[in-house]
Image (cartoon, rainbow, N blue to C red; front, side, top):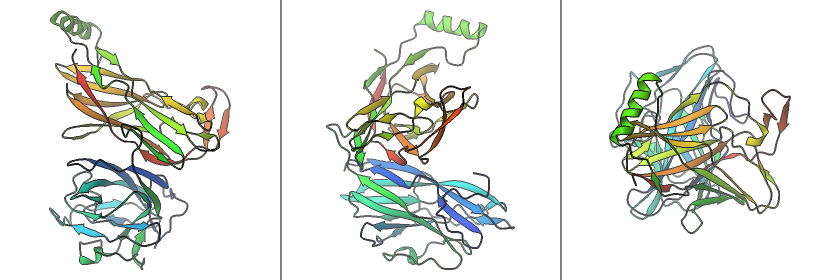
Length: 383
């Protein structure tokens, strides 16, 4: 985000500066299994818009104070962990006048000592969680979440963060609008789905053992010669089905966005694997990417996906996004993985095309929200 226009029309400006949560107003996070190491983590986008005529200085190692409010309006007790905290004065980020910059804060839902805990990192740490705020003794249900930042002197760690009272926003402080955070128990026999307001989301992995064809010596030589004569980045490919199923259990038709709204996530035993990606050329969204689901019906969407060889026993996973886009996970091995889709759509209205060259059409009633589905297991093998 580079312009000075606010993303959220409900955002409140304080002394010419606005802080916003860029995710949809509804965020659905599944509760993980109560076992060692199980967690669900998601990144929340935070935007700082500077509408003043001077630069705004932001230290990413300072803490954005999270505020979590229960359905009854009571703010939950907030705690602070300072393990590994360092003050780093020389890492300020500057937001130029009339511009905005975006950052990410990681939120983790995890069980510790049979207590469900929500951890919120600072801006610079992403998934490290060496210093963080946390709330515990949580349960399934609806909460409201926002962030507060002291733009005058920063948020140095202090006992003031350990409070259970809703914080009054004072002069010099920035507060984002609240978003709804829904903590839900997974459903279905294998805990593969979550349901919110009558809409069920489920990541589909039909095969838990995914076979990567072996390359014998002759095949390796043929691939090597082919790459010399006609270079191709990934000579050996194997298609795979990885999809999402959405079921409408409400009493009216609901439309969904399958155009750039599905985010794949892949994790191995030692952590999450980042993806690379982009688009060869901009392509307009077609109307077919916004299907309407009737009451009691479901739709399953499998974007084009394939595994490819890199070299030796290294592989990659490519998943199509939009019309001409592609997201790629690299440096995969023959081992166990977890996979899921995140449905992330903020716009209830979209401009579509029946084809790439015809007139546009405005469609509405698109379901908005960010839904993190439960992880599904699979393994890469040679059979």
